[in-house]
Image (cartoon, rainbow, N blue to C red; front, side, top):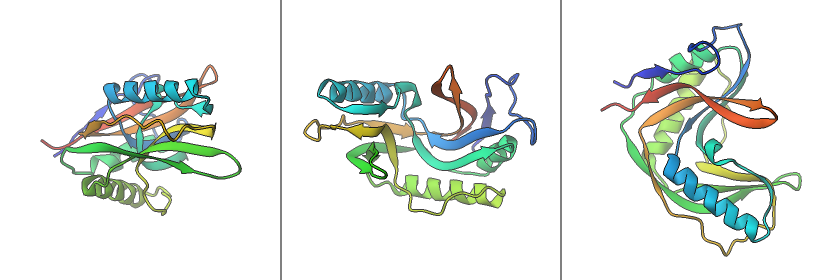
Length: 193
């Protein structure tokens, strides 16, 4: 059985209790430091070729399984994740894609079709809904966001290929530190052995 590891930084090593503090939360898979470095180099290359926008910092690159939003129920979210049971699996990078809206394109790197990932995302959303969280019911599009408000993206520059072992699910807080978005792990659930 998978087990959780509580690692909240900035709140004396514990996840805040209901009502203590409101946090902006999401659940994700970390692609690993080597893959984040590859993507950072790719974003830098795009910028050198004229791409403009707000690009994701390497440390913030992740694959979202579920967006929770603002809540004072961080412990309940962590407990919901502890109900998940999954074996490790491997993700492979896919194609570049975009979400468009309001003149601001979001550019992302997709991952190749992976039934284990789709099941984990569905199970994550279901576990959170059972715990009272209002998780959106839209199609799951697995991706890593590379930038927002992007213009002049050079589609002729191929994205890096990589594989990533998905062996943990992370409950993250999204916050601003000195005006910069920072993602802080609150709870990590390891895959079963």
